[in-house]
Image (tube, rainbow, N blue to C red; front, side, top):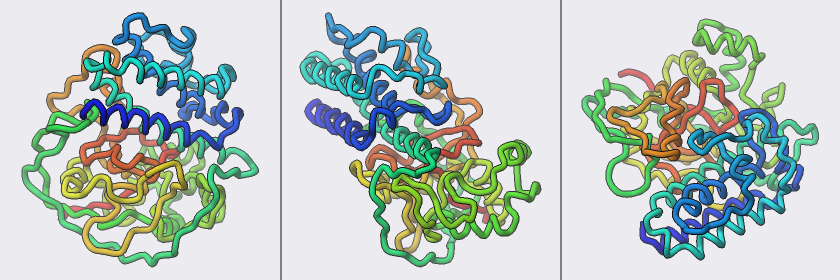
Length: 410
């Protein structure tokens, strides 16, 4: 990426993060609703910590940190950077205040711009920092959603804005490529380390559903006893359902007629993609539907022919929610609306080697106990995902905008 273009990208991403947090009070931005979620204030600070630690500290002679205590407070999981505040206790960081964190961001932004002529050797790190921040924008939105869902008042981050109702077209099947195909990132353009190397895989004849599974279809699964039939579930999944009392997607009310979203409690749109389901739930639904989840290679092979910037993704800080599929034929909703669970574990591609140094901890150390999701969601910044992008979460995770597309053998 050219220097001036990268600087523009940096400014745009940094401003978008502040814009997303603009409606929040200091209390909204400080509370942590569960160990897997982080306060919005922490996201605002950690994304600045990344630039301060890996770019300014290491590439600007004489740079003085805004506050030395922040190195401990806002480190996420980089063991190579020393001790850090426990993830599950990030909600205890009542100070610095939200305003003080905003001043920290301004300090880092100003230092990055002033030092720009010195940062030519760090361009790749700056680009990684921008993509890292776009990820945290998405995480921040999903974490705010989880936090607000715990509030009995049901606050909304943005005003409700409902689109036109659309009919649900019957699900159709699109045959995928079979035989030897290549997946993984290769060539110019940004990609995270775990997206490569590009390599060959063999695919058996298969087909993908032309659209995502909808709320209405999921309701039929519930009404048919889907959450009460052990024969549909993986053993660990059935144990999780029983232990947690799971009976519907996260954020559905008890009647299955309303759902909680970033615009508060709203009637569920039966034509919209189901969201906030775990890998275990997605796998059980696929069995109930007489299908299965696609493998990562099946999904990626098909998505390589589709514009990754298409679909219902976030363009600014406005309302985001999954939307019904547009009318048409062929594969739709491959990018946007919800991240799509696959049947593939998050493991290294053949030949994968993490980068040297602390930034090598970005992805590789998490290649255990996680499942791959593909595509993008309605909270993903448009242009921040590719066919090769590998999102990953443990199979119980539901607070992200996660849904599913069916696959079958042919």
